[in-house]
Image 1 (cartoon, rainbow, N blue to C red):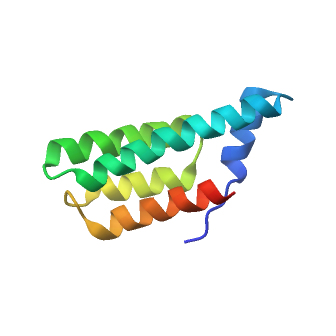
Image 2 (image 1 turned 90 degrees about the vertical axis):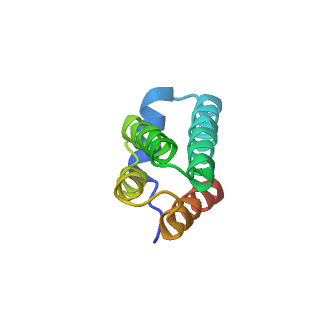
Length: 100
């Protein structure tokens, strides 16, 4: 799955204006929050914890217009807790986002 940062980068630029330091800070905050929720998903063993982490991830994605992450979070909401393919795909998203 190829990560496309276009809409997310546009959202960050719109929020930060012409301040590259603020764009970098917002991007870092997004990444940190997304990574935290993905980590919680990876460790969740009950429906409640899994669902809460997936819903938080989906909300984060929606607030930053990160369509791919929203789709992955929706997949998590439909999957069983600890579903390895969902967690793997989400970790792949985080890795690709970190590399851009």
